[in-house]
Image: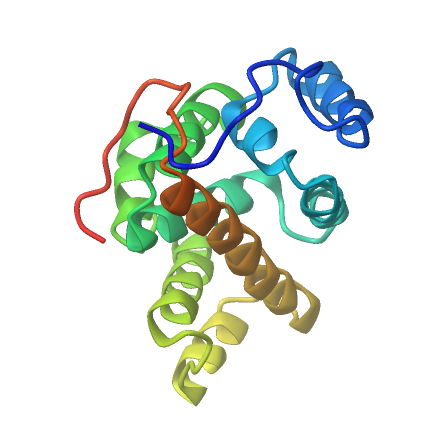
Amino acid sequence: MPRLPTPTSIEEAPPAAQPLLEAVKKQFGVVPNLFRLVSISPAALEGFLGLSGALAKGRLDATTRGRIALTVAEINGCDYCLSAHTYLGKNLVKLSDAEMAANRDGGSTDPKAAAAVRFAAEIVKTRGHVADADLRAVKDAGYTDAQIIEIVLHVALNTLTNYANVVAKTEIDFPVVAARAA
C-alpha cells in the first residue's frame, strides 16, 4: 500500500504540476504513477523532468541509458523502477531478455556497454567513491569525459526515482518485476 498520496488524475494534482503532467501524458500517452507521485511537489516534478529532458539530449544513447536504469534499479532494490525500465527496455529500447538480465547483474552482452554499466554499478555501490581503475576502464572502453559525467548523472537521476518510489511504496503500474535483493 502506498505510503504517500499519489494523485489519481492530472486534475487531482496541485495546479502548478498539472501542465507538467499534461506534457508527460502527451509524450507517453499516459501518466505513470511515478510522475503523479512526484507531482505532489510541483518543484520536484519540474526538477525531475528538467534533468531527465536535458540528459535525453546528451551523448549517451537511449539503449545505454536504459541499461544503466536497470542496473541502478536492481542494486537499489526498486521494484517500481525495475518494472518500468524492464517494460521500456523491451518495448521502447528493444533490449533482449538476455541483455536485461546482464544489466541487472551489472554487465552487458555488448563489451563497450558493459564498461558503462559496470561503472554505473560501481558508482551506486561505492556512493561515487569509484577507484581510479574503474574510471580508467570506462575511458579505455571509449567513453568520453562528457559521457562519463552523463553516466554519473543518470545514476543520480535513477537513484532519485528509486528512492522516491521505495520511500512512497508507489503502486506499480507496469508488469511487475521484482529486484533480486536490495
